[in-house]
Length: 436
View 1 (cartoon, rainbow, N blue to C red):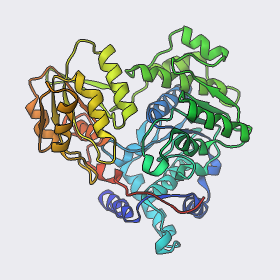
View 2 (view 1 turned 30 degrees about the horizontal axis):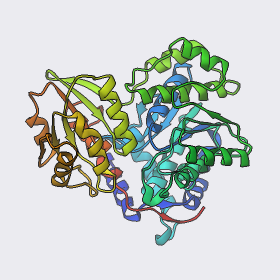
View 3 (view 1 turned 90 degrees about the vertical axis):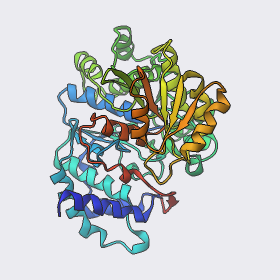
View 4 (view 1 turned 90 degrees about the horizontal axis):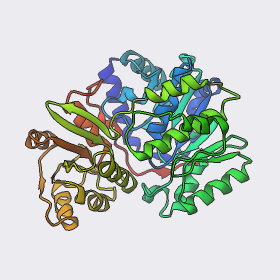
């Protein structure tokens, strides 16, 4: 088997859709000798900011000299982004080996209970991190939390970034129901840190933490830390990250609070904390690049809360600039609301189809923008490459609406570290509940 064949095998797992439930993952972990039992985790859930918070935690602990595994999804360009050790992507050779080793295990499942793509990749990651003897794994949920495949671990800390509306068709149609799914990662006696500020969602998280005797720390939405001495001191000392946007200050506070709470188990000095936060890198989230004389801002604002964060950043950190917007979205997202949020800020809009089976029509997207801003010209394009060419003389361009689109832009602009074009592996069908 070579790498292309391994990726083709993983593509084939998409036939089994996506399932909520831990039974398959637990069984597959047993067959793989339970690699999770040899690892320590920080488990991160939430609606937005999960990846950025994970990146901050990884950078801080790596700066402290730890060997740190990082598991995130979706990937922007290459599948290998999902599994990293000390921010080095897993090699093609290791992907091939892990796929080869897991294939015989999958034959022990009945066809109607076959593990899904995400369940298989979760066990591949655990196996790799254990083999690499990682000191700590920063472990991001896929979807939800309670019945997400990642929830087979017992972490040192559970982090819930925030709760907003997204994936309502699977996680629930109220913030309380969504919070209940995310709060499913809370384990008995394990500290919980959250920046959730929606009262309904926060109530659910508090109730769950109390029921499980899990100590709870809440980072306020204005970035004020909980009353923890070192975290407060670091804030006064202006420990900062290069990630743009006011929301990233909250994510940074969340990461700092987590590090402080875990200090007795994993001591980290003030200097590694500062250095780690200062060096954090997380592409596709308010990522500003210079390309052939243009400023291009890449941001995966794929839901309403993400669009509001992008709008806030454009109004403050890019005040006075009226960018040309390149926008593409998935049809199962609230793209009409996202268009309404972003329309007043743009000088012109090019809409494009996202390279996904779930893409919203570029024509539909183009029609939505003028309804929110009648003076705005919105033009539907055949693809992203055509849109980039159409605005090549514009000084400031924002590419947004979907992380899939941002990944495609990184590849087209030659900014991807691994341009193998495996974005289709991010596709998944509606989850079904298969157990708990």
